Image 1: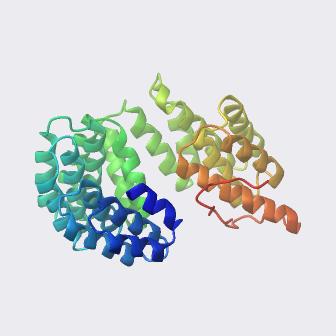
Image 2: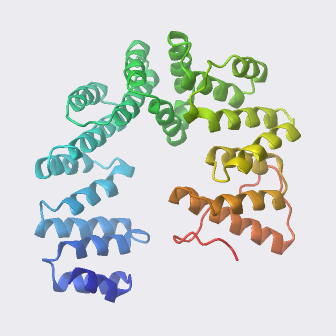
Length: 346
């Protein structure tokens, strides 16, 4: 019934709502209706989920969807929504994800004591992912550093490092969302590197910081003295950092050759693609034609869906520029949107 009704609406929010209203007992229809509205009316999508929960207060998909809709905005309704889900759904392994989401809400509000207490409790749950914990402890460390609590920040950062390397990526994501925390993130990483001088992820993070602040001589020195051997999981990133460092200093041939060699081996290397696109946007290097070739090859390889969508948008922009006879100006930001099917230009 649910599948037929949804297909018959052909994704039209008004038609979906009529079907939902006609048969509120079918829980998936509330979910389909919310998702059909989401792009144009996020508040309407949330309202539809809330209506569905009135009929199905313990339905897992609806509870999860409500959390997903509230989380990006740190809405005050997020914490009650998480606690409602915790009370309604099986404990493991879903509980850990909900509790980490609760930690994030405390961090949004700078409630560090509550966030730390929740993290300590979450670490004791059976089946809790160490990657998830490494991520969360790093975010707590950054909040503590930003709020002027360096000792606490260092202790939390060590908790993160003890659980794996994912905290470094969490810090990068936090800075992208909150640019005002960039200096705090850099100080946090530098002190961590002093305590753990042989940690390859921290060494690489320090080099990336130095490239961003144009401390090229120091970056070159640290790159030459990276702890060895470099873990295989960092191989792609090390090549990308070497290329970024060369390009940032105007050594375009050297930087491009590093990226070309890497992309010949692995066309879908997103680290190399990111550096290549960044150089094109900032310096018009490489030219449009070469960039198009590499992006097209990458798009045809195995990629995460979000990255595929981004590449499709860049390919369309390059096609538009070629048709209009335009050339790339350094610093020009191309459109990076694409249809949800991520179809490349013909």
